[in-house]
Length: 71
Image (tube, rainbow, N blue to C red; front, side, top):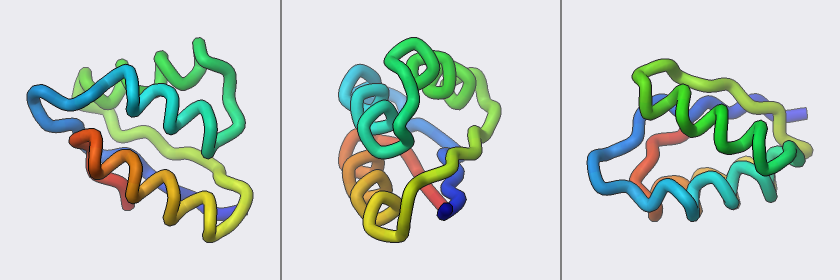
């Protein structure tokens, strides 16, 4: 398992697309993904467990294109 953290979301970010990316790459439900993204919007970094390095890179690329920062 690989750890990832979504730390910030820019103003005007594509939130729905980010939620779907989290759902896909972190293998969580839509509701869980929405709650995670809402926590980041509220200023709280969120940690995720991903399957492998490939999932991490895919999530990072997608999330950053939608206006979020992933570490």
